[in-house]
Figure (spheres, rainbow, N blue to C red):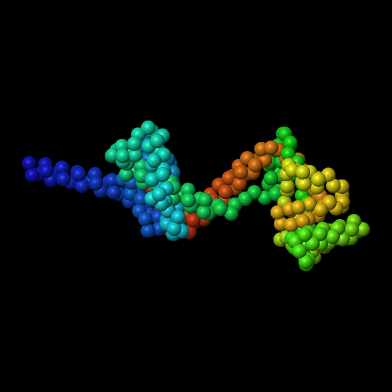
Length: 289
């Protein structure tokens, strides 16, 4: 009887040992068989098991970085996600918390939020270049129904004068004087760099693309080559301008640009994660599978 009990004890210890077998080491973290047992049970080939382990390694590396940057899932965000899950499943949050699987659900959500925070943090400066927009968004556009223009402006917000009314008159007089010089052959770019009181003076008053959707922009759009506009009001002061370029773009340009930025961010993050793996200490125990 004692021998039978001893044998049973040895078998139980063997099972526990197997469940806690170290599958991989990631920097200072361990991946045990028990931690990925459910996922491993759903696949058959060793190749599929290695894929699961590599995904687990990636998650650990990302969570380590999220912790390092101080952008782990907050309790507030975690609770918001749990409330959303309970609503989507038509149960109370208290009911959700009562389930035996709640701890694993909570851990998984926290992990996903942390990784999502990290992705946003790493890719926050990713954008789409003008060349990419021209190559992808504009060429693919089948219905080019929005007109945009680029202009250059000379904006004057204040000038020496005795009163506010006199100042407006003085600014208009000064702008008309500049306009005359440009009409006679002067360089708009040079005058903008010299006199414009807007930050765009650095590049000769040149703007980004502006949609033709209001009377002032429509007036600017109607200008001929090198023709100086009449004086108009901006948020930064009175101005004169010239039309530089025009183009027609698709009404879905915004969605196309957002998609392009998303794809660029995904590619950037994938490469960043590869470099993170290269810099980490990773050891997989293939014989333990």
